[in-house]
Length: 270
Image (cartoon, rainbow, N blue to C red; front, side, top):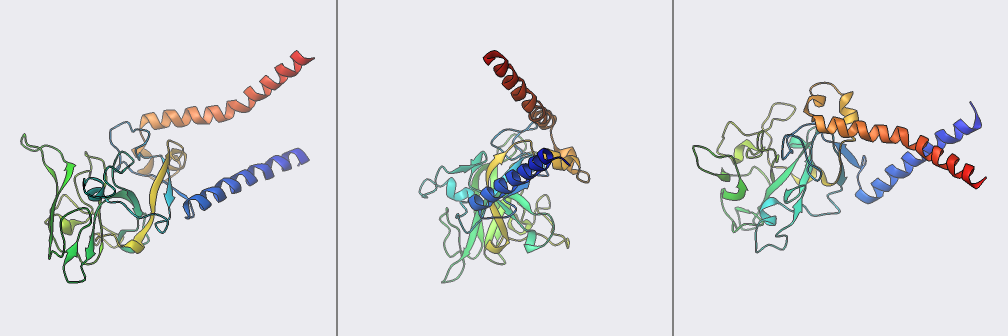
C-alpha cells in the first residue's frame, strides 16, 4: 500500500471523526442524527425540504439542552412560544422510545403535555386546563373532512396514567389526525401505536425522549434504507432517489472537475 493511499485513508477517517465529533458537541447526543424510515411525518406525497420525509437525516438535540415546545403552546396567542414552528408546523418534533422500550424509536410531533397539579388533577401548558380530573381539548389542528364538514383534532376524556406528552405524525393521509396514544381519543380504534410487546403506547415520559429533532439533511439517509430490510426503502419517494443519485454523482465527478481545472490553470501559467 502506497504512502499516498495510506494518507488519503487517514485523512478520510479524520474528516469523519471530526464531523461526528462536531455534531456531538453541537447536539449533545450520540449518534447525533437519525435516519427517517417511514412516511408518517410527510406533508405531501413527494416530500419537501424543511419537512421530515423518509430518507432524510435529522440532527437530534439532547432534551437536557432544550425545552420541548408543544403544539398547543405554539398555537396559544397568550403563550411565550406562540408562533414557534419546527419542520413545517407548530411545536417540536421529538424522538422517543415507545413505553421506554428497545424497539425502533418514533419521531413524531409533541401535541401537548399533561403535568400533575400539586393540588390534584392535571395541568396542560398552552391551554386553560388546570387541575382537571380528565383532559378534554380541541386543538387548532385541522383534520380531514367528513361528510362535508371540517374537524379539528380532539382529545376526549383522557385520564393520564402518568405525566407525559401526546404525540402524532404530520402525515394527514396516514396518521396526521390520529393520536399515538389510544387512551387519549376515547378509545377510537383508528388511533394508537403499539410497543414491542403489543401494548398500547402511553404518554411519553421525559426520560423516554431520546432527543428533539433539529436540522434536516434531505435525501442522504436513503442510502442506508436502500440496504435495509423491507419495507423501509419502499417509503422513499422517487424524488428523493433522484436527488440522492444527483448528490452521489456530484461527489464522484467533483474531484475530476477540480483536477481538470487545476491542470488547465497550470497549463495557462506555463
